[in-house]
Image (cartoon, rainbow, N blue to C red):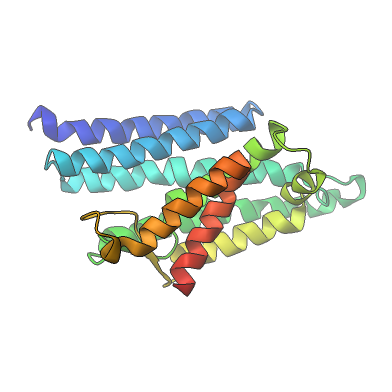
Length: 236
């Protein structure tokens, strides 16, 4: 096999490696590092597909390797973040509620349904220009943004921390995100075949709003952008 055909696969392996570092960081109680490694994995996930198209190096093994890496980086890693957030959450962490610690297993819904989503994607030949269901990296990025928003104390809004560490919010997140992953909701892809406004109006408007949100709210904009992406896909 030519070297250029293995370049996308090497980038995919970097994605997988970043996911492994994210999991290790969770067990070291460094949730910010765990989140950053998920963002790094997302960059590699974008680059492997980009290089595969540029080099015309798409291969069956590359497609399977990409999904296997994504299960770790965007399924297991964010699932572990939610697992530990649940352990520290308001209701479960209360002294009189130790009997309810079994609720933390809800976090495992994220890697399970991420794996199902990726398996369905591999079998569906109609998801090249759009998606059916929430893309796994988008779901992982939403989850990864939560520890950064809270642990770095970028904002003085106490209610943000109260929401992130609220048991019922986290349980709802597990259920809703799992549903969105395997739902049949059509969602647009940020892939431009050209730069014509008429053919890419939705993408341009979405990106303009995203930039504005990032300028105004910084890291807090990340979960807003994922929610906006879902709403745009459903309503527009």
